[in-house]
Length: 347
Image 1 (tube, rainbow, N blue to C red):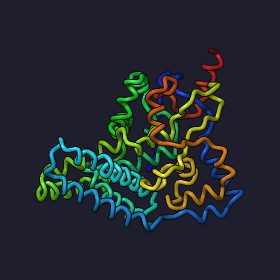
Image 2: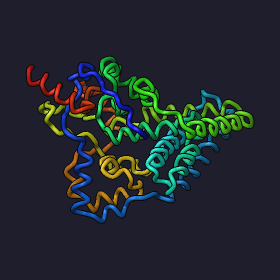
Image 3: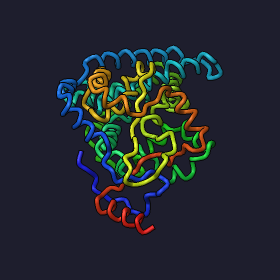
């Protein structure tokens, strides 16, 4: 996808974010690892098992939707199923679509795009076609204000950095990740988007016609819960928020910008916790990320990581020192970086 050439006004970058002029750390670490361990390049490539796991998870989630289609919303069984099974299935499918966005399900990019639409079906709303371009910009221009849509906006940080605000953000974060990109910039609409919409429409119509609206609403409720106060949903925060107060703030500091998690919840989401490893080598499939870490352990052992995703959510909400400002931002051009450095030197 072609870059969207634009420049964020300098004054719009609030200094309460962690500003840096340093290059994002993943490219340089990748080069160092390849130089010392050239065998890691053999780990690149798709994982054939992914598509079969996706089909199994889709079948499980759709089956639950059909079985619970007439169950009252007052039923504890309904909500327990939606939370523990439904939301976990949707989280799995979110991360499968993430794998397909890197062409890690099939060798042919077209099949990755189309199969992402299949993984999208139990989510209920078409989004896979839009996710890929935005996510690839997150990798290519990580932390760059105006490009990386994973970054909270100044407005979000301003109004949602209290305990109440962070609770709201953590509960409804799926909506922030879905809507924020559209407010920053529009990506080109392609045939993949039309295919995504058409396939989802046909599936939704089939499900509602044969099993009623109850089955469809179960899918939507599961999707909401998957991005809310759910143990796996903590990965959205855990991946790039800095959950401590840096001892010193300076644009010349290389802050840790990505954090991994190596716990058992990775079983459900294609090793999404191996996030530093993934950013270093985005074309290594999920099944080989542990092998990458083992080969290059001298690079990864010193890096900060999380021991618990649920603890991340608790700390994020309850710790007054952790807010939406705790993200690293870098200006989007050399001119901006020079101007910002000059302004900070004068102050």
